Length: 175
Image (tube, rainbow, N blue to C red; front, top):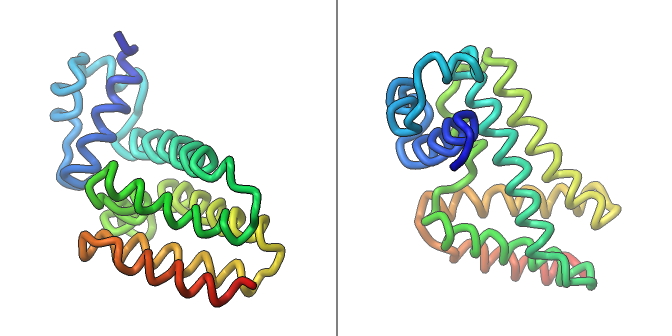
């Protein structure tokens, strides 16, 4: 059985994904994780601290999945295209849940510097992922922006159509 801390984070992950951050209360997390209130506060001083842990765990998971998904691809262009296939894979796996980081961003006040910093770290990591692959700032930023908009649009319309169109654009952008 998972530790109380792990159960709290796993439960929060499910609830934040299904209900949203603001609609999920600490008492619901405590109840569904089957932990005592004291146990919750032993591990997390606040819901914001739990959110930061959730986002850090999600960051690690998401990049591990992306890297594993694209691992076998050695050709640069095909690796970029495979990254977009990863979005399709995640949409199917998570029912078009979208980006956990952008979902949280839409629910927090912009002066919440601690959570905002974790979100920015994730997005910087993704931007760097494309930059390190392409070694061309303009092109990598273009691909990054296509990637980000593909996530948002696929969540909005519950469709992979614009991901597929982005792949066609990439075929024209990268020789």
